[in-house]
Length: 86
Image (spheres, helix red, strand yellow):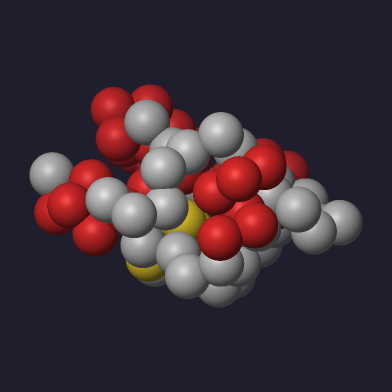
């Protein structure tokens, strides 16, 4: 997960570092919390990573279910489903 309040790496940056791995290795975050990201920037970052890795990115998206992540990102928790649909 791309939890903001946990001690993990930012998934797209970590995958970018792995993009130089052998061509048979697929790149996939567990799940990105799409509602904590700007949709246009997420699309651009994902397309760039997919292109640079030779089409090896598989992207999983979710709305997120932990209020602490949204509080840390100063994002609204209540309307996350609507933002995901947009």
